[in-house]
Length: 220
Image (cartoon, rainbow, N blue to C red; front, side, top):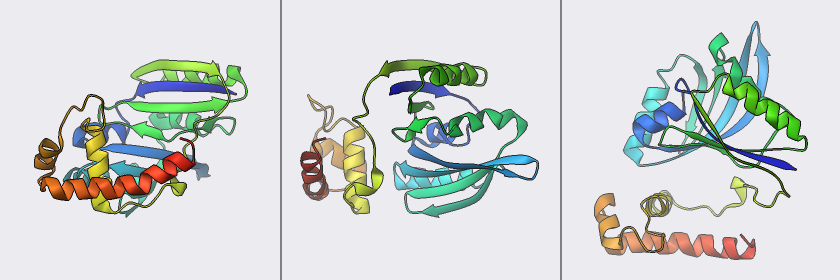
């Protein structure tokens, strides 16, 4: 199977532009595309990461976007429909049934989107790139290769973390606490999160206890 990895940006994206504005990350799962009268509607499910205040600002601002319909928010998970205008019609390219999104689309806080798309037919991927280039403000092919699928993301099988554990481990990872060498120590991280170092250590430890058995047992 051919796997394509892309880095792209279109400035009018209702999600990625707000991720940059509010410094959050949103993982997208395209779900369906359907006709609604003379227009086309798309639906997607997202998982958002970031500080609580930043996420709340993101949601408040998203609610003001007239393109977003039926927005539902449940903790860090939100879903919506978007009614396409003529300038947005390129979004239908994502819903080609010949394409497989092997990872969620990452709407990053740098304003870029990162995609991993697979297809049995390389020519379909090449046409996909060509069609996207007509609409994107920036598009970079990070890689395209014929390889077996071995790195698939299944979010529902991951262990459930509490909000405090999730926030601690996500922020620690983002700030380089798990890098080698470390980019930040526990005390600095705790100050930024405005909690004590022992409390942060407890959140991280509990999250690691839940995550490590899953990672080892699944051979990740």
